[in-house]
Length: 124
Image (tube, rainbow, N blue to C red; front, side):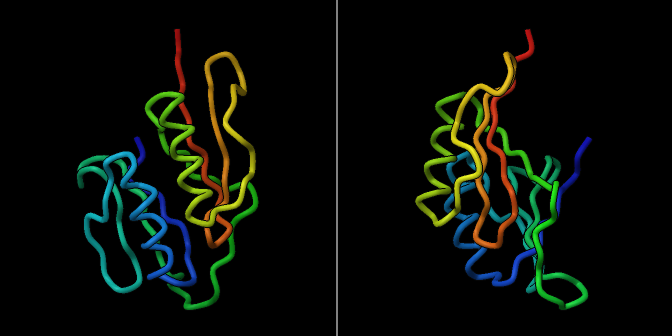
């Protein structure tokens, strides 16, 4: 259902260094892009995350209520992504833990203030 999600960044090189290392933990990499936008994923026909310098060339601002949720695979994967993000300079927005019986998640803000969730969801 989701093709890709775009988040704004102010410094593309800094953002790429962060996401190269973070998303490499789950087998994703930069698939393609141009100077102002880079697409990350595992394959071009799967959901992707895009980093972009805003088209209007104004400073990036993280949205209030906007969040990108990245599957961690399992609880250990969620914990690993959370720790890696903090190691890379992200700020804590909620440590790993069970949020409801079917949802385990952890929350951070990337270097530009974009909110990320790493999660595992088990239905049934």
